[in-house]
Length: 282
Length: 244
Image (cartoon, rainbow over all chains, first blue to last red; front, side, top):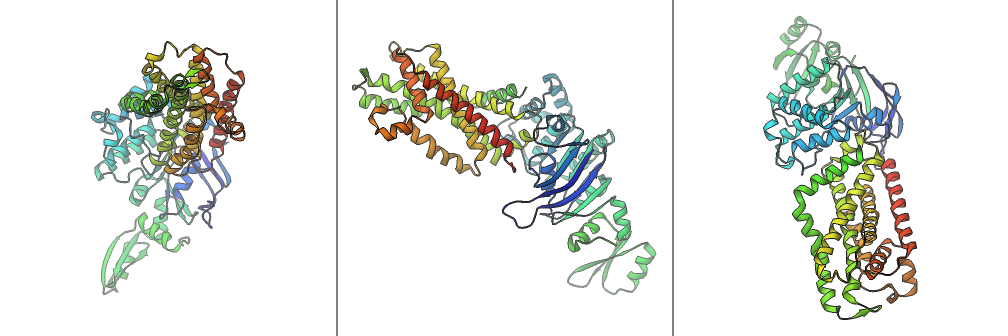
């Protein structure tokens, strides 16, 4: 569905490219996560995949066709929820939705019925006449998701979509995204909540300094690191040790006198390991 | 259809802000009319009372300012502050349709400002002749300057760039381009330069129509060329900007 070929982005103000020769492929219907520390190049990647930024080198293929800013047919296939709020502050919710629908050439009747459904799901119906500048941060995030889903895209790019949302709605949004994914929507997600990627994504790409250092199924990455972890606190820092099974973890723990914690390894451990070292996990 | 979508968007903007838009559109022109009209109104310019020389110039000036700022400021805010312009870039609406919509929307707002002034100067209407061509020139002038507004908002890197552009381009035109005094009063070299700008042509055309004199077709051509060139430049710049 999405193929990146040698994708590179350099900014004149920076000596190092923000994204360096990235090659990857996202399958149709896949829930794909793009993870990495701040400045790893995730948003630059998303912005190139949505034509906001033009690549310095390389190509983006959508359904086998090269994506360019004038490719109206390809742009109809995707939507974007940006990291920062990207809403007209002088419009109300109905107008935001109508503007999006009109920009995508949707019939007015369809815009209204689909808006009703989505605003209902996101519990925004009672606020629909409110001007955007009067909405809370969480409401703006929900509205951005509704807007992105309005046009019934084949692919949705979500750049930190749950940042600032309360836990309850975050979980609701997970369910909604899972449902949409099961219905065939291809989702590309960047998030700082690693447990979000672990819970939702079929595969994750770990980025560091503009490069993909690992691309794998989250479960497989965890298993590679070791299913169980022992956190050892030496009085200053906590160091984690990873083990294939619980018995090995317990055996190791019995040899340690410091404060310890035995737990299941998470994708966050993989993320931390890669962010720290930048090398492949072996 | 992208053009209709943008015009709808402009209508929504207007619906909520019409009082502010209306007052902003008439305050400066009224002050100009009072200051220059009362101060110098008894003079004759080319055989016509100064106030009748002044009114068409100020109408051209108002359509220029309103068309430029209604598009330039709004797009600049959407692009650099609200970031809502990102949704426009990624949308499947063709660029040319979006730009045409913005330019027409801006030109209509310019015409609105011009029409408001025509209403205000009603007492002089028995001598300020208004024909369909008068409206056409206002629209054309609006198209030129809303195109300039779109272009400025696309190449501006900060909010201040828009007001700087206004200071360096719009402001000099306001005072030097056949609005408050006839072009013959400026030195020949300056006249030649000023004649390359669009505003003196718009003022000249509106003045000729209001006097009932024959119009200069070359002035119409200048405005048309400006509208076309600015549209092409805007289209080109929006296609070329790498980092929106």
